[in-house]
Length: 184
Image 1 (cartoon, rainbow, N blue to C red):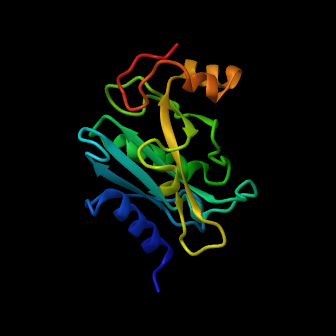
Image 2: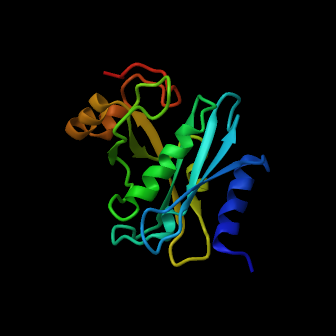
């Protein structure tokens, strides 16, 4: 029998075509909880992109999680692992407080990585792979559902709060560009 984590990693292996990822542990700040793992793939799904995932968020329980338990993903034009580590840090810190639902915005509190002014995220469906691949049967009562994390500026998160995710998504911006100017 395969374990939950083995099923999740096998799913990622299928998405990556067997490319070997890097793993970064993130220690738990919650008593009685395991830490999380940040998982990164360089040049995936295209050259120059960094594709990252969390593992461990979905081990927590929230009443809002009725159709699946989230893990987070990010895909950016960068080779800096800070992007992948930032979503793992947020998953660890917010695992009991944030449902990571589409449209949720999160203030990181400082620039996410050196050379970028982006300081937060909005949650939406992942762009780096097909929607069917965002659902992972890990053998639990609920599947893991992979949510996409998109770096944002404070002014963009304010726009989303006032006008909604759909209006923001319709603006002219590149979700992979970590050096972009604000979309507004």
